[in-house]
Amino acid sequence: MKKSIYKLLFFTLVVSTVGCNKRLDVTPAQSIDQADALKTSADVQVALVGSYTQLGALNFYGGRMFVMSELLADHNELIWSGTFQQLTQMYNKAVPVNSTFVSNTWLAGYTAINTANNVLSAIGVVDAANKNKYEGEAKFLRAAAYFELVKLYAKDWSNGNPANNDGVPLVLTPTREITEADKVPRAKVSAVYTQIIADLVDAEAKLPSANGFFATKNAAAALLARVYLQKRDYANARDAANRVITSNRYTLAGTYAEAFPYNGGNPFGNTSEDIFAMQVTTNSGVNDFQTFFSADGRGDITIANEHLSLYEANDERLDMFYVSGGSVYNGKNDNVYGNVHTIRLAEMYLIRAEANFRLVTVVGATPLSDINRIRNRAGLGSKLTLTLDEILLERKLELAFEGFNLSDIKRLGIVTGYFTGGGGLAATSTKLVLPIPERERRVNPNLTQNDGY
Image (tube, rainbow, N blue to C red; front, side, top):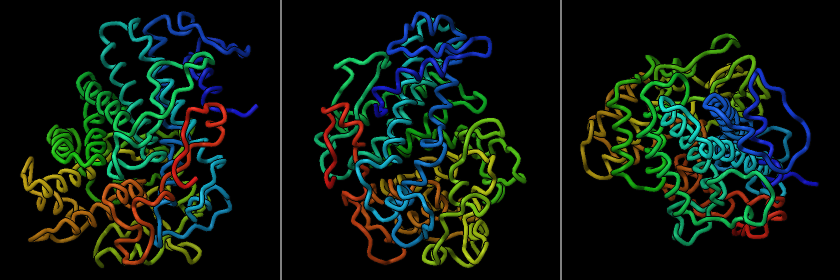
């Protein structure tokens, strides 16, 4: 029998909540008794750690989802030479409904959502000192997963009417046994965004300012800024980014290279500008950017001159690219045990600059000041005047090959290849939206398929 979200999610709670002093019961079961699984605050804490593990899985925040989106968005700035058929299909904009990469990413997202839902369902047993924190973390994780899913598997907020366009299924309670009630239809794009924002607003209110490498108040605000920007709600995007910046808890790394440290293949912790990062160690975690973008990995993705020509000659960000075997590689993720830098402070400056510019406001700083801060860190001189296109180009270069290209193309309504001046697909092309996985629609006939499939 083929696996699907409606089969696999039932076992997530068991895997996530096994502590070091508990034995794993491998007896097959279709349902889980919450009273047996999450009895104490400590049990919920273990489940919450499992939620982070699920979010950072290979096919999701571990990097492969972002690699897929970069290939799907590319027109002429990347060169794909790999042998993975499913990624070749992404690169060629010809993705079939039975792609295992498409279905694995969908499943990874909903597995992360289900583990977060399990934590939230048991929040009543958590001790008072940790209740808000655990709830905030679970809502942050759920929102993060839903945001990536709705961007990949549905039309963008700006493509038509989000109140009419099908998004992804909203599942807000744990899936523990197979019932017809679990076969929910796709919620509208607007409803998915409403849920994401509600989760993040609550998470920001409940999370602490410091929480190790787990989600914090600023991580929730930073993700809110990203969500609001995608929604083109520039005032809220600006304000959320400004809250992160003015918290003064993060600073830009001294050089661009220091934001992507290489430690000789050894683990390296978060940098001073990492607001949230998926942790990678010799024992756990994965950075699939390294797998495909680095010459030290598979080296399947190399960089074309069309991208390199976008930089000014003395831009230190060019130093992140290097030649190996006659091809040009991106060195941001050469360290096999480097963390996946999910949200960086530089992005917040870029969001605040763009939003302030569009709204003709000066919240926190002028757009020119924010952009010059990014430019100066890259070894470039300050600009005296600024245009929107210059802000967007700065964003593209600063965040290059970190998984932003596809969502930016859709948000901005531009043609792929816009910055390199050549052809490409329209932002509304159905080829830039992944299909709903065939195996999910077989199990759940209530799931509609996207246009073009």
